Length: 314
Image 1 (tube, rainbow, N blue to C red):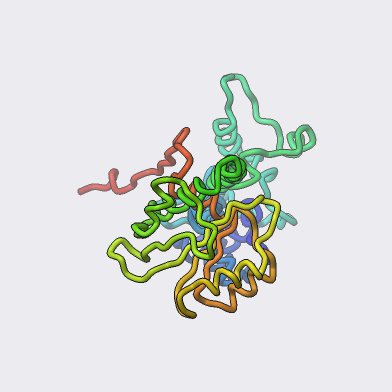
Image 2: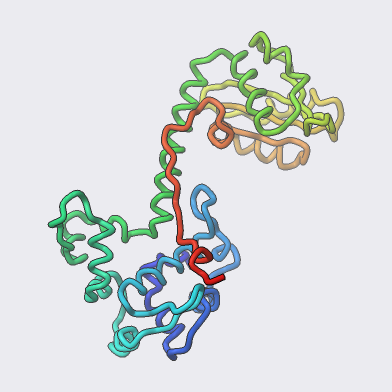
């Protein structure tokens, strides 16, 4: 079963606390997970860009919107209780409680008006059904805000990854090997034995392009092959076999990095040799973005939350 969106769990959330008692949010979350029969993998799946656990985040926004509609209340941090309005809504036994239902409540309308407000103070909130007919989008309410941000970052990074690969393909093979050594250095590896390619951008065409150390103290060698190939081509099994054959022994660690992709046979071959790691073009670009190699920060957004400890009595 897919992880439900936040607006698909209103009913679950209210039913989980329908007896009027105060509940810990974590207990409500567990009830919903059990009712939805979520697997361990679904419960722990992370948001894009690794920004928190998806299911927990969605339940949190389910709670937020129910609070804004006045259907539950929170008298202390991490706990909630259903309100009389919440009980009345459940008594209607609707087929589904969604954002259209929540829009009945003035407090929810005011919250959405504030969230979607542009520059005009006169902007009104349209019913969701009408809004969907007009532009087929509920914008902020389609996904939890955290997910919208995470998805936007993921999309921007995907576009940036394509730009990076295109730019790399304009460079020389020697520059590519130097860039790889620079990336590995930024990742914390020792790269003293890649000095030749670092200093003069000369490419080596043998089976081994260089050697890095597993850490800066110099423990364990890792042998590198770096190929700047067309992104639409695939590294074949024979290429990996050639690389493997160039390793000093059968247990030496090998890292094969390319701008291209790997064929299925090549992947299977690497899987059968536990000492070889493959990095294709998209993985390479993602690592470059993560470690700020060949990219620079354009804009930063900081997401803040309420510091409840600040308001506690000493």
